[in-house]
Image (cartoon, rainbow, N blue to C red):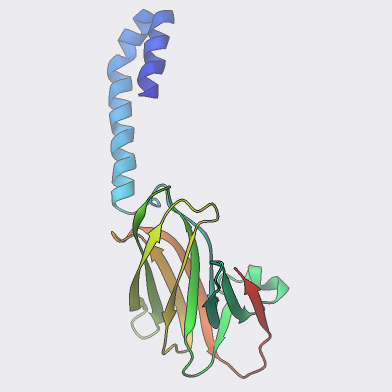
Length: 191
């Protein structure tokens, strides 16, 4: 609509040139609209207006009465930002928690999906371990926070895809799991 208004105003100043270019401009706009829709529906661009604000994996998580979360996770080294995947050490028979904060439009009531996956070294492919649907309501300034829990974690490469119910990827949290030797430094924080 804005492009149409702009072309209409432009036609006041250059009516002949606007008429000559009308076919090319129309085809260009239709093509651009088609390409953007194709990229969106084939999941090659992220869903709009969703955005993953922050995400983390923790050893323990508790929701406090004021709506914040008390988390306990590993204190990562200062240079850990150089590694694409932080290392998380697991304790046998204890779950891990994926806490995510997703921006969504006001009054949006839908689900997001946490897809827990591990890398199968034998097949050289990502394998889905667990899929968890979580209801959300949009509009919170800091993003809508929710979490999922995964038991029976084993060493290897893991990731949690945060997606729409249609499977469009909002964001991804990747990490490596190793068995705990009990010497890790833990950090408690409020999210």
